[in-house]
Image 1 (cartoon, one colour):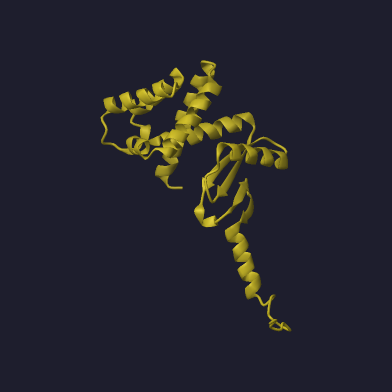
Image 2 (cartoon, one colour):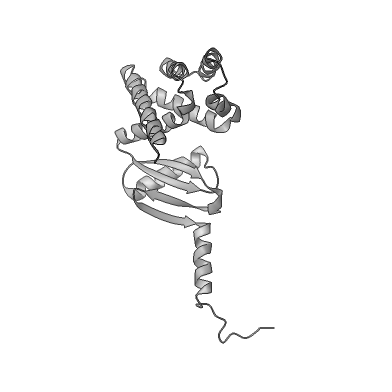
Length: 196
């Protein structure tokens, strides 16, 4: 990890922890968590929003108005709305996606959930994600927090990573194994006759 990405990670963690403390003090942690999940979905689904967050070209007052309007429209908690304003004023809005990730990870850790990364070929619906979390929680025997990453190159299936354990049940991996087994001479056409 480069020193700039380490610094970015530290900053994201600090902002996430500060927001968590504010949410707890105001006894709105669950509501703020819901706000941030909704905000994450908004950011992921809107190229315009991602552009506004990343661009240094927007004036601070324009960004404050835009983030305020977004928070009002989504009926976010005051804690969430004020936090977005703070990010704008401190020039940290571009770090919002990383801060959202850091907040979710810190909250999962606090709740004792095990972090599980799952690579899938296509986006999971909310229902599929809940079903996957339930199945993995049952298999592991503890509550899990799933982070799904879309990786079309796996073709299908999934790759599940829990700590240092990785289970690769992707279509790509199955095809690789098939190719290896066919290339190793295990399936030579010895003694086969053409049927016709």
